[in-house]
Image (cartoon, rainbow, N blue to C red):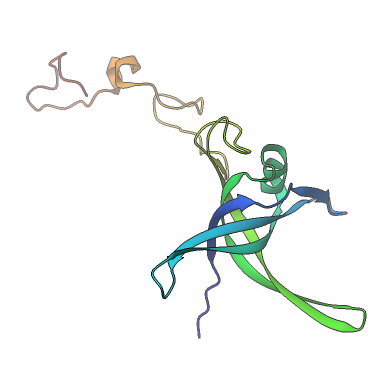
Length: 166
């Protein structure tokens, strides 16, 4: 039987992020996330429901979160659920937490905890562009800046017309 473990949450940090490093040098950050839900109760009144989740991030994502986010910051987390068990004072305890694999910082300047533009995503850097006329790895030039030999060639009508915007 197949299984699937995916969770997506959007909410606000309940506390400042704690950043630490494992002996291997891997960054780990932990924080709480409050997710608000509004629903109508049996009497038809709107009721605000708040759920709290413990989130753990690893690697560069953990460092970015620690650098840019603070209590109250809006954030989107995508990851998986993990069930932890431990024993304390002779009693077995357990908790389900979220291991964040992808993070987006939401909000703009002046909003609680937002540092920068509208949405910040911590994910791998975009791939570099490579094409026949540009081996430098830089993004391709606009059509007006490309050399004339980059235009299509052929024996069809109109290929030699300078006003065609290929």
